[in-house]
Length: 214
Image (cartoon, rainbow, N blue to C red; front, side, top):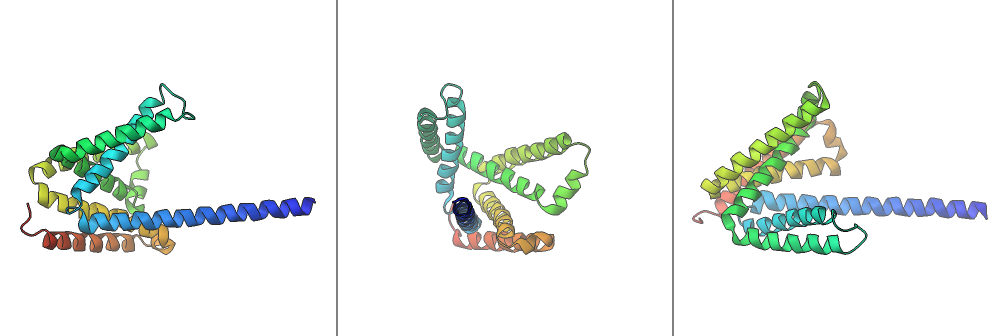
């Protein structure tokens, strides 16, 4: 009886591990597809991306605020979060320039953060005195990127959006490829080469696809 129960537990744990591995693989592939879509079709799908970003930001903020008044086990935080996400998504979609500012700024900040996570950059930052200083520098650089790129994207919408979406999509895709191909983690040059190739081809393709469009 003991042997059977032990065997059953081992089998269940194996099934759970296999299921988790499959889920992780699916999520990584989905992340790669979305990153490549952003890299090559960022400007064309701009309003879609703005709506998606608005939805997730609104949901996160609404959910976090509602937790101050309701327990997470109830349905209220979820309902409030999803409602806030839907409203912010619609607002960002309608207020185009505001959406461009938030989307481009957020994308640039995400790209800068992705760069700080590259092994070479991360090892350099790790040598700084104290983890607090490290975090402050990363946050400050991301915030500066958010504001500067957001303002420039509103002023020079088309070229900046093409560049920002191409480069950020390329960086996110290269990071995902590292998760899918572990051998790339040992060779940072491959990561940079993949990001550079994807980014350059993304800028070129988006420019060609959107010639004559405002």
